[in-house]
Length: 315
Image (tube, rainbow, N blue to C red):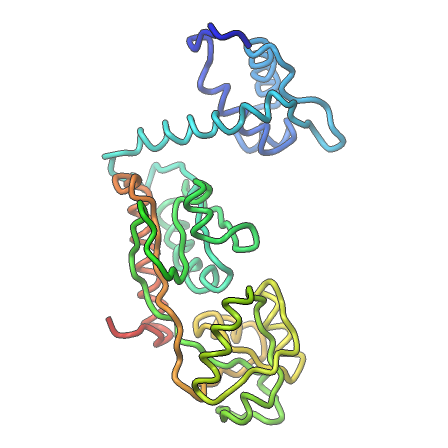
């Protein structure tokens, strides 16, 4: 592409189509996601190829694959589109009825189960054009996703301040013990001795977090005999309900799981030491009315869950 490339030749809609094809890896799927006919998208791709003097995409086994030029183009195109979207949203009230926007939330599985249902109910009844894309911790940590521009909002138990990031405190999710309802040793309560003796299912953690957790348990005179580690907490309820293993879980997640699995929920035999959840947003998005609306909805969802499940710590 020559250095004197004329930007007046570029149609903004073509860049949106380019982004959609790159993301979908398939022209048919891209056209469906855009709500356009396949011939229209194919014609737009032809115009892009002519303007950039590059094929951009080549036939692949299940669709199309980007050329090296397209790989180099996608990041600045997405950044430009994101800047334009942000600029157009600044200082505008968020119109729920007519909103057509996808919000990207970086959350772990526990907060997805604890907060997202209430938010999705609000969206379904008041903002049918709003969509939510969840970025899980298996992809990257919530803070990394936020700082990399992959997420609009991150929710987690953040332990330190980050320059340029705003934090909104939510609640402290109190821990509980989950066990199968017909567990031969447990009937409505668990002792410290039972907690240390029984096998546990635990979520996989890095060595630093695991050492901290075990140190906290030791300070209360208990230990965990971890029999099984999983990388996704969604697997934990099914493992608990089919074995005599137990697990320490956030209250909202455990109570939700108990509705679908044959579980009993028991108080911890020692004081819960969970950290406060927070909403994190980038400081330069403070005037984005959409992100402000989403933060408010998450805050309301947290309050609703806290009152319903009695797991909100005193302010």
